[in-house]
Length: 103
Image 1: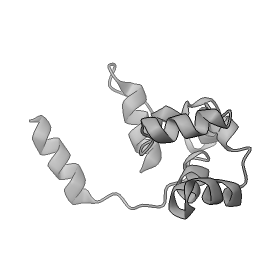
Image 2: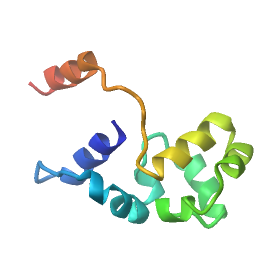
Image 3: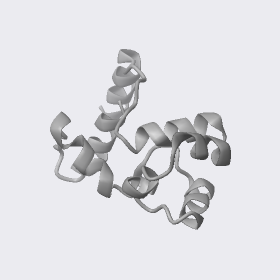
């Protein structure tokens, strides 16, 4: 789900972007943290104080350190997202609802 969301953002305004599984690591390393879903201004500032501006920087922190400093769920989410990992299932109803709003 994460990679689909990021590809959609990257595709604008041209309309298409495909991030192949082989390219996920390379793509994520250079991605700015503010591009990740759930990164608001406050969290972005906390991470910048730690010297984190890209997912590559974020990967240098152990999961346990992120969980300790940013709370358990947020730390784990950031650790996973920086690696392109998102195990949430795409809900077809959510996709249908979003597409209906564009018609």
